[in-house]
Length: 299
Image (cartoon, rainbow, N blue to C red; front, side, top):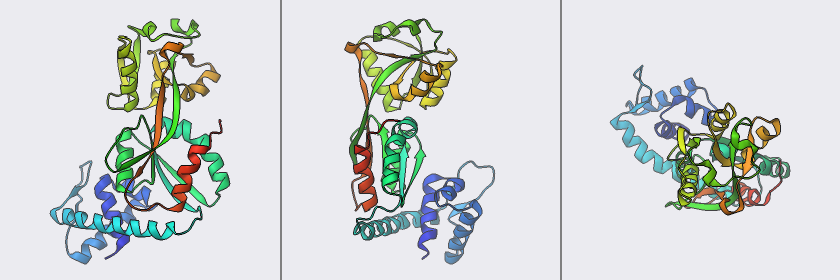
C-alpha cells in the first residue's frame, strides 16, 4: 500500500477539501486527485464521490472502511517516524503550529524570532484557525502544537502555559469613553458592544467578568476574530474588550483608544500550548515548546 497516498486520503476525509489537503502536503489539487485515483485503481473501488455542485466531498462505504483502517496505519507510521527522530537531540525540521488568530498574529511572533535565530534549520508553519479546529488538528496529528486562549482540560490533551494577557477596553478616539484614562466595567453598561462569538473561550471569559459585576452591555455584533472586531470599533460601530497587546499598533497610529481597567476590575486572558498526550515527540517539538515559554522578548 502507498503510505503517502493513504496519508492524503485520510487528510482529505478529515478536511473535506482537495484544496486544503493539497496545501498541507505542498501539492497541486490535480496531484492529490491523481494519487487518489491511483489508489482507487489499485483496489478497484471508488473511495470519494466527485459529484459537481457539492461543497464537500462524499465518502463511499469502501472509503469509510479504508479510512477507519488507514487512519490507524497512518497514526502508527507517524508515531514510528516521531520515535526515530526523537532519538536525536538535533533541532531541525518542520514544526506545524495551529493557533487562534490573536495569539498567532500578536503573541507568537516576538517569541518565535529568537527561536528561529537560534535554530536556523527549523521551519515553523503556522495555521490560523478557531479553538475547536486547533484542538482537532492537534488530536489528529495534523499539528504538532496548538496555541489557544483560555485553555480548558480535555481528554488526550496536555496544556503548557504560554502567556497571560491583560485585557482593556477599546473604542473610537471620538467615543465619549475615550476621554478616560481608566474605566470601571460598570461604565460600560448599556454600551453598544462588539463581542467575540459565543463559543469562543475569550467571549466566555469576558461575559463572566461582566456578569460578576452585574454589567449588561448591548451586543450588536458577534465576531470570530480580533482583527475584524478592531476594524468595527475603529469606525465607531461600538466598543469592545480585547487583550491590550493586540491593539498596540492601532494605538500608536491613533485609530483606537486603548483604555485600561481600574485596579479592582482588571483581569487577564490566559493562553496555553496544547499537545497530544499519547505518542513520542520529536526533539525539535520539545525544544520549541521549552523555548517558546522562555522567549519573552517584546516586539
